[in-house]
Length: 596
Ligand SMILES: *[C@@H]1O[C@H](CO)[C@@H](O)[C@H](O)[C@H]1NC(C)=O
Ligand SMILES: *[C@@H]1O[C@H](CO)[C@@H](O)[C@H](O)[C@H]1NC(C)=O
Image 1 (cartoon, rainbow, N blue to C red):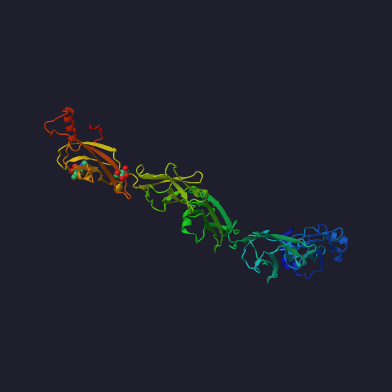
Image 2 (image 1 turned 45 degrees about the vertical axis):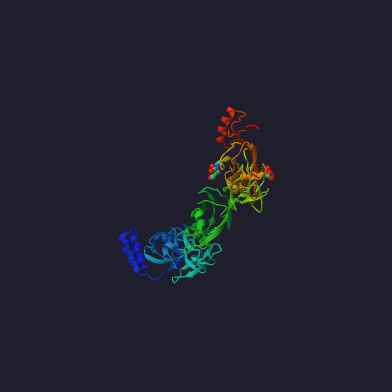
C-alpha cells in the first residue's frame, strides 16, 4: 500500500509539502480500519457507506475538520459528501482495468481529517460483475482440411478471452450443429481452455467444399454472456473421383462419303474433383487398332471426334472404339466409354462384270440356248446399291440367262451365220439399283465357228467353149472355177469330171481335169467331121464333212478347120475371126448361141 500512497501524493496538486506529510503519516499506518465492498461499475453518486459514522465522527465535525479522500489508485474514484458524511462514487470503477485478472481487487483509500490531523485507512473491495463477454481475437478463422483426412483428427482453435474473473470468466465453448465436427476442450497447463475441432465424419469435397461453423464462447455469469467466431473450413480436393462419361455407349451413323475433317461426335466425361484432379484428357483406348487411329481422331481437350481418313462401308461397315478419359491427379484416375460408328453405304462402287469362263467359240449351226460364256456380276455396295442387273442389246442373237445368284449364262438366241458375222462383240451393261444408279460395260468377243453349210458355187450353171479341130492333145480346153463361202477345208474344192458317154466312149477318155484348179485338158485331137459338140459335167466338191458339191456343164463345140480340100460349103469371114477369139478364151460367161 505504501508505494501506491507515494504515487498518489506525487500526482496530487497539493505539491511536495503534501507529499512529505503524506509520506510521514503513511509510514506509521497499519491495516485498514474500514473495508467496504461494492460491485464495479456503480453509477456516479452511489453511496458506498457512511464513512463519518463508521469513523465515529459527527457529520458536523467532518465539514469543520475538512475530511477528504486521498486515493492510492491514482484516480479519485470516491469522494465524501460532507453534508451526510457518506462515501460516494465519483468516477467509473472498472475492476478489469484496475486489477486485471487477479481474483480480488482492493482499492485502498486514505481519509484525511485535519485539526488535529488524522489519517484513516479505508479499503474498498471491488467485486466483479459480468460486464465483459468472452471475445475472440479474430472474428473469422479459416481452416484447410484435405478430404482424405481420417476421422479422429484434431484441429486447435483460438481460445476466447474474458477479462472478468471467477464465475464471470470464460466457462465453456459450443459449436454450431454440423455433421462432421465435434468440439473438444483441452485444458492447458496455465488453466486456459483451448477449444479443438475433432473430425467425426470424413469430409467429401465433392459433396460440400466449404463448411461454415460458429464457435461460441460462454462465460459463467448471470446472465451468461458470449462471443462468437466464424470457422470456415475449406475442404481440399483429393483425386478420389474418376471421370465418368455421360453415356457408356454412343452410337453414330456416318455416310461412307463423309468428307475428311468432319466432326461427328463429342464425348463428354465429368470429374467431380477439383483442379488437375478434375481436368480431363480424352484419348483412344490402349488397344485401339492402328487402322482406327488412322481414320479417326479425338481432341484430347474437348472430346470432339473427327474423321481423318476415308470410310469404306465395303471393307468395314462398323467401328467400335473405346474412349478413355483421364484426369491429371496423382495418381490419375480414368473412365471409359464406347463409341459405335455405323457406316452408311453410299452407291460409290460401279458394278463389275467378270467372266467366269473364257468365251468359247460357237459353231454357226449351234442350237438356240447354247452356252457361250458364264458371266458374273458383282457390286461391293450393299442393299439396292449392290443389286445388279445385266443387259445386252436385243439386236444380238444372244441373250443372258440368269443362273444362281448374280451369275449369268450368255446363250445363243437366234440364227448364226459365220459367213455374215464371223465374230460378235457383245456389249454387256451392268446397272445397279442405287440412286443414282451406276453402270459399267464389258465387251465379250464371240467367234463363230464355220460349219460346212455352203456348197461350192459356180458363177454360172453352164459354159460354152469352142475348140478348133485337129488340136494337139494336152491342150487346155478351158478352166472352171467354183467359189465356196466357207473357210478352211469346208472351202477347199476338188474338181472332177462326172462320167458320161461321148459317142459310146467315156468322156474321161477325151478330157482330163486338174482337180486342184479346174483346168480341163483335151486328151484327143478332135475331128469336126466326126464330133461337132459334146458336154462335160464338172463337179466341184469341198473337203467338208460331209462334203458338199455342185455341178456345171461345159458345152464344147469343135470348130471346123479347112482340112478337107476342096469342098468349102460355107466360106465365112465371121468364122475365121471367131476362131481367133476362141483360141485365147477361157471358160467364158459370154453366152454364144452355137451354130449347129
Ligand atoms: C492349173 O495347173 C496347171 C499345172 O500346174 C497349169 O498348167 C495351169 O495353167 C493351171 N490353170 C490355171 C487356171 O491356173
Ligand atoms: C451332179 O451330177 C450328178 C450326175 O449326174 C448327180 O448325181 C448329182 O446329183 C448332181 N449334183 C447336183 C448338185 O446337181
